Amino acid sequence: MTTGRRPVRSVIRAVSDAARRWSDGDFPPRVRTLAAVSRRTGYSSPVAEYALDRLFSSISNDALVATIAGELGSLDALDGFVDRNGMRVRALPAGRTCIISSRTTIGVAIVPAVFAICAGCDVMVKDREDHMVDAFFRTLLEELPDLSQRIAAQTWDGFASERDLRDFDTVVAFGDRTSLETIRALCAAESRFIAYGPRTSAGYVARESLEGDVEALVREAARDAVLYDTEGCLSLRTIFVERGGAISPEDFFSALAREMERAAVEFPPSRNDPAAIAAVAAAHDLGAFRAANGQGTVRTDAARSYVAVFDGGFERAPDFLPRTVAVFPVDAPSQAADYLRQHALPIEAWSASSQRADIVDAAIASGAARVAAFGALQNPPLSTPHGGRPRIAEFVRWVSDER
Image (tube, rainbow, N blue to C red; front, top):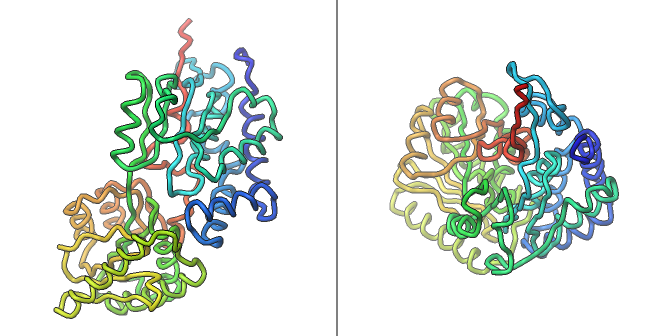
């Protein structure tokens, strides 16, 4: 390579080998990080284990190669000029890249960091207090020491004046809208700003699916709902159930509530936020009051490990609270899309029990970047665009050779 950087295949191999080591639950750095992640987030060890398993098992050599080649047309474009659409072009690094981690989602900065590294960028990650990215980078440097001058992970106060983001050509940030606006104001005007704001996900149960293995369907939906305390963009907060199936939407709701209680045993809720616990209790009490007045049904357990609300009307917006899910009966997918539009819910993905064309169309109309089966919502393939954005294409700049 004329840039003096390692060929991309060497980098991919090092990244995938480091991820494979982190896929081992007994790998010492992972064991230490797991404890630190649980302390920081309040998530139980089973939830944190699940997150690490899904994250690192997705970062395989084959998945990296397929994703990069799929977006850039060829892996070779990162190492030299290639023919593309009748022109000789090359994908060069977009420049110095800063990635600012999310407070809640475990390891969310690692995937964009990996692709920025594969693109040849110099990468700085704002790590969280559990130092997870730093620990992974140390493993990566054991695989490929040449990266020592290109990657780093540090912690700093979110608004520290000494961190000048104008030094970076690309800034990736996760957070709420206020945080994203603040971060954007700290960047250079010409820098590329890749923002991932708050989003949520919805589920749709087709009437024909209610004649199959409903028990398995409900079990998968409950897992999608309770994981990560329903805080992530892939958390299932709203489920629409079609009328006219073998069981009613009300019966599906009752089965879901039972499974959410069981799922809370497998993935216990966090207990480190008294305000959130009080808010969940208040949501249940409000649901109980509405139910007493003939407006829907609410279910929970003695520990308030979840709250499930069934509502026949569309006036109620979902509660953005831990392990709180709303179920709505509908006659068609268009009603679900109308509800999401009415409440201006930014949708990341749909869980769908059927690939019926009208369901997929409604998912697309809602703004979803992905349609997945129930149970797969929280386990996206590496190639899946996050927030509808590509994985590596935003970390390169194209140069053409027109001689």
